[in-house]
Amino acid sequence: MMSFQTIKQMVFLVIIFAVVLNFHIAFGSEDINLFRIGTGGKSGVYYPIGKIIAQGISNSSISIEKNEEKTTSTYLSFAQNSGGSVDNVQGIIAGEIEAGLVQADVASWAFRAAHVFKENSKAQDIRAIASLYPEKFQIVTRRDAKVGNVDDLRGKHISIDELGSGTLAVMRIVLEAHGLRETDLKPVYLKPVFTHDKIVSGELQGFVMMAGAPMEAVSQLLNNGISLVPIAPAIASQIKTKYPYLVPGKIAANIYPGIPETPTIQVHALLVVHKAMDNELVYKITAALWGKQTLSLLKAGHPQGKSIMPNTALTGVSIPLHPGAKKYYQQHVDRFNASQLK
Ligand code: GLU
Image 1 (cartoon, rainbow, N blue to C red):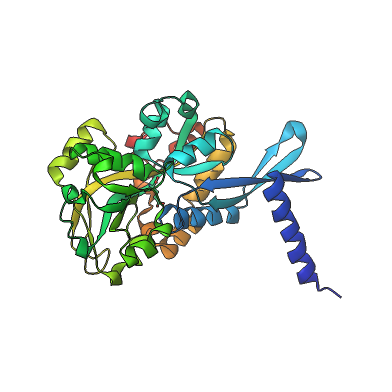
Image 2: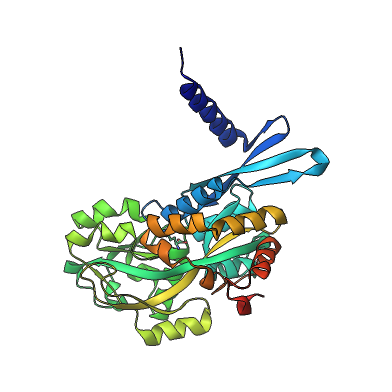
């Protein structure tokens, strides 16, 4: 005889399976829907943070009444790995994911149909739920490659991330600001999960990533003799004049034990959805994100999670807020920096 517990687990698995295959499943008057969050590579920061946010959303038991159909929609959330910011915008527009983590610079290009989105005016339909945390441009090299600055990357085997990442777009800007062409390096286009062994063996001399710090891809290499390459503040300021969301910043000393403070550029990571998403749903997602439970999961679950705070929820938001999120902030001005509401 199967125990009640086993039967319950089996029913749950069938639901998950059906949801994953069909995106929603109806039980009489109840509709279960997916809220998929596009993130990045598995050893970055988007992925673990996206997983925690998804857990927070699922735990919040969000449901929306659809009166005309007499149904209640409830939401289960999952994080999916992806190529990164550019991929996440494309996924939202294509309806393949409901939300995504996106660098503020990439989001603003999408909203203005500019730069990597020049040919894609549909990308203008993305809207923000919140700003989460600052990402730092991390240029990680083997110490024995003796790379003291960006110019020294010339001729080196460096992974500059895949097409679809926000990292690659920023790396191209960084190279341009130093008067370097991509082909001045010996570039490969891989996510850090695929570069780790190649860096350990010396086949690659480094990789770059625009991500929160600390991130696993760097921490895993600390015993292999690595350095972070600085971007000179004067060049960082120059980049900002052309790309206002890429601003001078620092990777603090000992974020990675033994690695000194390193000047670089930074950008805010945003949580983004499609403008056509239901206002009430976005309102409830925003409430779930800033609820006590999700905040404590974030604090306990990842070092970067501690810096996801209501007082910076509107900092560096480069595109309009979704009306559902805006309503939430307007109703809770005491917790958020309302002067930043636009
Ligand atoms: N910001 C990176 C990108 O869009 C991803 C960072 C991460 O995975 O944490 O490519």
